[in-house]
Length: 146
Image (cartoon, one colour):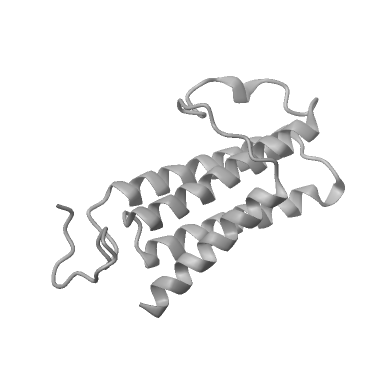
């Protein structure tokens, strides 16, 4: 119980700090990676590129948090996904040391975020659920969705 409460508190803090750090812009739906818009001149508009990548990272973290709250992502899966998200953020910080992102760096970060989003979708849709049911009661035995 303490672990679950701690995990929810940490995820709430992560989401709230990311929302406080960046302007909260809601995603308008659709698959953001389905279009071919990533093949267009990334070197020209560097600030919007970094903002766009930060927005994708924030959406990924919010999706992880929603999965935890809904019970579709368990604590081990969440830890693994958050480690991947932190690695992407560290890579972005490394690329931004010179003050800008090249188109190659931007495309690489977007591919990494796309892979993270695929991992999140896979973990949300697998049969592993957290040990707490929707009424915050611990379930006993095998964890299957009802």
